[in-house]
Image (cartoon, rainbow, N blue to C red; front, side, top):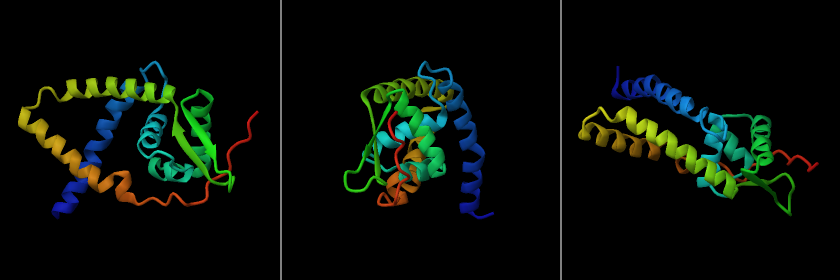
Length: 160
């Protein structure tokens, strides 16, 4: 097995386990955020003004599924949709103050739980993980994907 294959296998083996721990702690969070909602808030918070299509691509959902997820976040006041005045098919997303507060609190709680989980590792081992995550962020982060924010979005739902 090549080193690339061994790395890919390790990622496939470990990332789902880490996500399980994060998911476990998110469902206990008072905001009631699901993992896809949490990930969407994280993405929209860091990729300000991102399109619905870019968010869907990042999360791995279809545009209609992402539209429904965002509708739920809009309804609870965590995300705002801004329709382009030039073309109603283009929708930009932004996180509201309420969404930022929920995201910050959920991240803090999840981070504390993850810190507890890795506390038994030696300092050097934890440093290795931090370095590995930095490298992975460069490979898999939003800026590495060159997502096409000019893609046509699904229309925003009319306000009721």
